[in-house]
Image 1 (tube, rainbow, N blue to C red):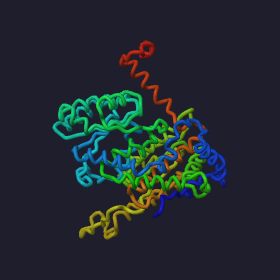
Image 2: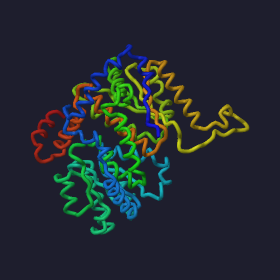
Image 3: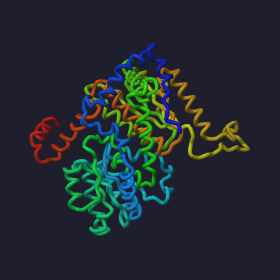
Image 4: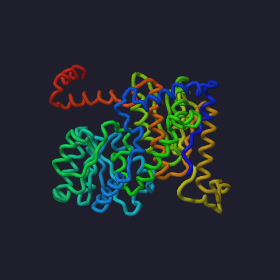
Length: 446
């Protein structure tokens, strides 16, 4: 079986000769600091060798819990925000039928909530679930994150009212801290099945923990294959793999080399609509890991060819501070031919009989060449086919490359101090006890 592969040739041509190779010592040092646990944020390195530490018994336990939920529920709501939902949503969306009413093996509908404070959204969700057999996966290390805690309050109450407290207990699962926090206290008190979010794994690196694995299994996908793919990439990106053969090291090096040349924005591009949420997960992973100390590449994303009709002009001719990373799927899972038409009013009969994916591939290649001609460096990540194993490879590839890249950049890739700033203001404005001083300070500013 092939691995995903990286092509940096259309990015390297924008750099001085030897610029990528010159970063090899820094990249190797950065990766070694991850292995040694000497890098900033070294108390959050539990993801580094997580794939190879996952046991068959652990996977079997998650699959058994997922089967219980699948048999008891028409819908399962995953309550979580940021890394507590984006990874699972990315994998599920990538593997699911594009039209949700065609679900795999009659799997329950997987819904995501707890990621906003929209009153309409939550009202419509509770309406949708009225008289439905639904379960909840509550994902929160603390249990006090506003968006998720609010959603869980609403859904717990509704589930108990509709099923009765005893039956509701069977379909509510907590994924939380091992010993502390409001969510742990609630799970122990109510007797919910629970899983632990490891203390040394941050949310954005948590896809391969129960945070991601349980919802993905509930959706009917093969988490064993997902983990196998991650294990394969853990080996392919190991610290002893030569720099030229290590895709994560190469990606980290070329990103930093481009950044040093003034390329401040990285655009994640896909030509497969199912990858939209993979890009959303990637944006959090890199934005939250690298965007600090007034440094960092800004992560953006587009869905092509759709966004060529809205963002294509700016990418082709706008300010030259960007580069692209294109995820290219070599083979679609289905086959469909471009039809012929007797009248040929649209002039497209020259495409008749071709696979639609061939047309898409030529759009991809033509666009990449045009953007390179327009001064946009292009990195290409080639994925043989969209399945659990290759998505597992992608997840680990981007995680390890992120850890290396952040260390080369000179930041702590594993903290997120800026995320707390808005919370302090919000709590003060809402009158949360203990925030009186902040409330008075804010009043003076508004």
